[in-house]
Length: 254
Image 1 (cartoon, helix red, strand yellow):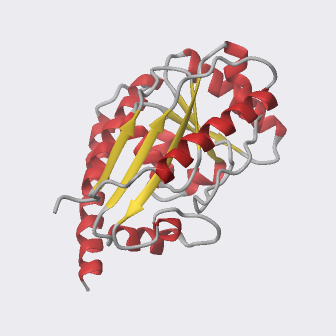
Image 2 (cartoon, one colour):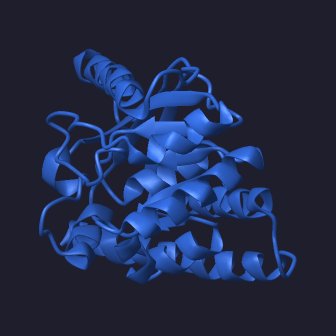
């Protein structure tokens, strides 16, 4: 019963934050720059995380430009990375159809990629290059799907090409979640065929959720994209393993 009450209260707070974000978006210029859109999403996501009582910590220095590559666990990743640094995202095309998340992803300048569409990938690469050159960090999840977090899947390297083409730094990152009353692999991570809305409802009912983000040292792109993908995979996996081995801090104040 307590979990359902928390879910209801936090869902109400989250929807209030979402409607406030609509009002904030109306204050932007008719054709906002990528930086203005990224800053809007940054403020929106900080408010959204506060509404659902998700606590997040950052290790390392968020990059001010270039490409950010990370493992991918959940829809929460978008909120957490955007709260950590104003940025835009490379997302699968299906995200554009999601309630709330899809609309806000579109408004924030996300680059949508259609799988198995070479023409779409070329257009997405061009959009990523434009975003990088505009000075806004671009977040990419090269695994291509969310996972349960037991390991970092191999990286798809196609979307790394824009960073090589413009000589932008690439920053490896890792994200993980902790719960004090559940299993992060199934109740924070969202993967497979798990329905979205029941997962969100259950997550909002948790006593406390902590997200941990680790930013590694930036890499200057060299060689081909596949070689770069292997280097970045090893660094992201290393950051993630370090998190898993580290002693956990108390999740919530006593």
